[in-house]
Image 1 (cartoon, rainbow, N blue to C red):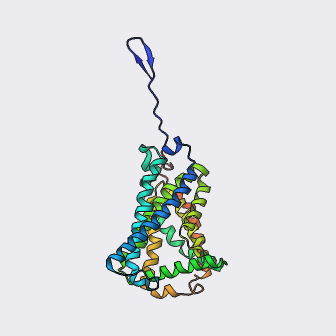
Image 2 (tube, rainbow, N blue to C red):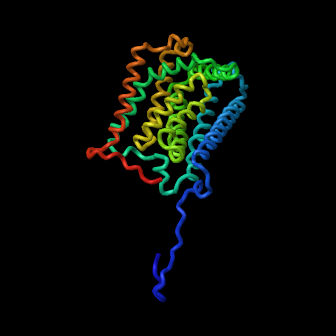
Image 3 (cartoon, rainbow, N blue to C red):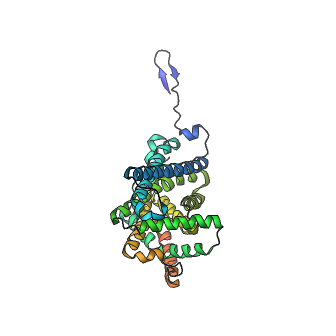
Length: 316
């Protein structure tokens, strides 16, 4: 409000509506997030398939899934471009509908941890490493669950496709880029930067972690692995919220996927290993669970400064 000097009457300054587009139009955050995950998945699949097919046609090759090793480069490149466009770039654009422009970086958690940055990343690295036997154990349990024949067939096809890609003998750096770097960045932008924030606003922190973790598990369409994938999603969400940054989760995602690539590159026999043979020893699983719980409990300490102040989350 200001004053008109001629008649000393207050001059009312119109208020600027700083609400996001979604808020102004009454879209619930959880609904916007759910719809976008579905749309992003479709864009990812369409772009990835289209790029792979165009590359194969340009080379005069056919599209024969029975000979997947010869198609591995084109399929992985298409998959990577699909993730970059559909999950990463498109999500960053759509996120503009849900946030005030001046708070975009904070909303998406595209900021470094406020306190003890190095310690926050060290904790994240230790957490994803010590949790691996626990994830293997969950994967083993998941594979014991009966699945409908149709779902089981889809899962078998996914496993065969993945095995063919990993066994194709592509350069290790390209494999790390396609299977670890791109998903580590793009999936974290979709799930931990955007979707997690939307569900936090709708359901609160705990439910947001659980719901987005389950959606993350379903997103991969690997029903024999849905339990470990969901738990991994919840773990990444917890780290993101506690650190106030999506970057530790990106690093953890890269380490998790990259470790698998390197292990199979060094030991190709792991691809065809029977599920029972891949089950870690019981003592290792217990140790993994105890260490994971301990690090989860201590992780918030890494985000506190010397005065005992936790990072301040700016208004979004």
